[in-house]
Length: 469
Ligand code: NAD
Image (cartoon, rainbow, N blue to C red; front, side, top):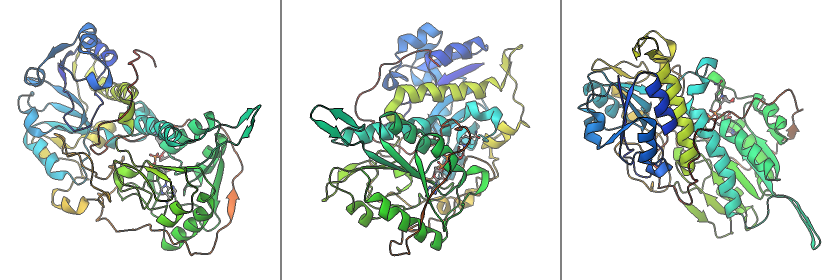
């Protein structure tokens, strides 16, 4: 049983699908592991550490030859897999929507493509949830990026020279990334408010010590599987009216709002950005799917004429390549463990397992996933980012494409509806309702995985800390 780990080809992709820690565990399961030389370099995992863990290091050709399993961050090109074993499992973020032809090419190449972002969000599979692990880090990094661009202190500073007030941070979208952003901003001492369209998010926000704001007009827009549905025009107007007044008073706005299979809803208009004071910062974590902010330039950091910095980094989890790889690699390891007979130390795939059924896209030369419709390829494209994407599609062909709905019960994306959620600022103002705090915080679990090709993560890279959980 040979497992191969290739160096990621997508431009700007700094993560790696296995770490020395997970390589050692895969070997303990009975696998031999081949790692392409340099595969972990950008995530600060040196070849020597993989070798010490028991992997064989080599060129791509030797790494892939005869592999039964290929672990990957992004979808590899079919041509790169031609010498893998027949039916080899290729496991990673396949980003299939809008890329149906590439999935068909993988089928034709005879490999079994497994889309980790389709992992059902059930208890057993939480440990395999790449969307959660990566979104959690992205939420954290969003606050760090905001703090870096903010030319003031985040916490209240009481000094002999006087007091500096704490920064006001507003988080829009309180899913996995948003909850982590709230927690991080609170740890830095900011005064935090947050909004979401799912009523259940209110308790989670309050339990993290932030104030939840919600309009009376919008009671709950929960959709399928714990995700949000798209708002009606009236609901959008009510939300925009609420947000318009609030944003003008904020120092930092972090937007994370997503709707499965749809372009990111536009929540912050140009006028709202202009209402913010000079020196304010907006971080748009939805930049890969077009952005929540009208003026976001995906992949760029730009300052408006009014002095508001708008940060639209792509592949934000990749800016923390070491941590992101550690968690991603553990997600993959946990799934691979379910595919191996531990006594026989051999592959023993239960094709009827719900995790396998939900994630396998191709098998025995055919596209087998019900959500992947080959004739729907062009229709599945989403609204493109407003600015030119900084990174070319790499070997994975990854583009600024929709985040794939994580559960198999979502229909493939429909054609992008332009400005579907454009805010209507002139609507009647809605009341701000603060929800009562309740119960325990569901841990700020995280999401995100099949992300678009990104600009090379800037700034420092943390030294790899190994083996910690
Ligand atoms: P997501 O990435 O799809 O969206 C991010 C957030 O944006 C969501 O909270 C969504 O409600 C919100 N949003 C959408 N439209 C909005 C709008 N117009 N205005 C404001 N907010 C808007 O969501 P996610 O982070 O993947 O999490 C979705 C849910 O799934 C959460 O409740 C999360 O806790 C849950 N979850 C469950 C599991 C599990 O059970 N294994 C794992 C991870 C997440």
